[in-house]
Length: 368
Image 1: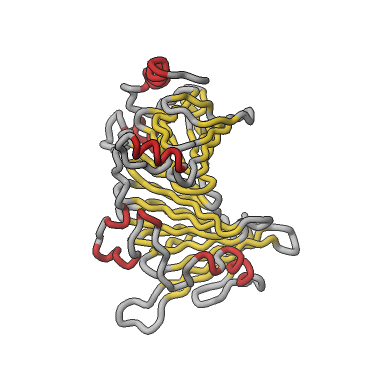
Image 2: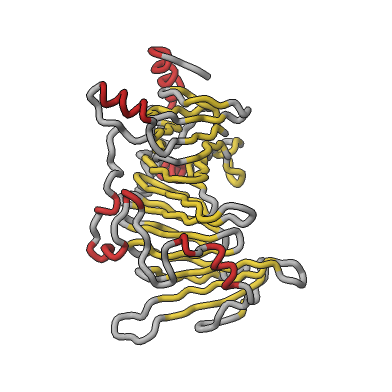
């Protein structure tokens, strides 16, 4: 679908016209790129591609590719017009209260995946996914999510479940306000590995991954999740949070994460029975005045209730170290208890968390 000039403005209004006054999540069949800077490309579900147009509507399933930098011609043109060259980016508007800003170098797909487990009047519950392949996305979510115990609580719950951001390792769900998710590809090939950062300067979100969940990421918190299909590493970039690990088919283990906390999950199919064997280890730094930190570890077969291992024991997989090395490697920039690399222009020192500063999140409030 193509629009230009005044017709583009009218088209955007038509797409969003029916949802301006809705309090619960409501989406149209198309989404809109309401702001485009640089030679952003779109690849439609049918495979056709071209340069993205501002204030144009696109079908769900479209892939958006933001360049890492402006071309020389674009920079010259901006300076000739007396303007400071901006940074490539794209503002994706699913509805007035559900917007996402893709940063330079970001690659993402905007998907329509109605929830299958619940219905509204017999129809699937609307759910949209920003599948972040690489780069960074900032959520700009203004839909009301506060619950007061009244009739509006159903709409608030609908808004919380309306959108999510998927990464190769886990998914950010139940989001509100501003959050930033960044995906860094550490290794390509047959066994790719990634490092994903989830930052919440002023908003809220939860993470759901294989065998783990972070129930709530609060203000000024950064969670770093890295790994491969077979290995996941969870660490604290800033702030404090709790991780709920699966512990067999009918139990969980909740661990508080603070500075220098590290959680690891190894996965491997058992030789007998071909069930997924899972081993979990969480290491905590020593408390003030203590000589040693705490180590929790356990292992189990997926779908089974029996759990082995205990505090202080090591993972049972002989090749666990190999799995970890493939996931992190030298490119990850940190060891079990080392400092974390900065979060690009949007992050500061992870050790500043005690001060509760917000310098790490500068740039979140850029105006469009």
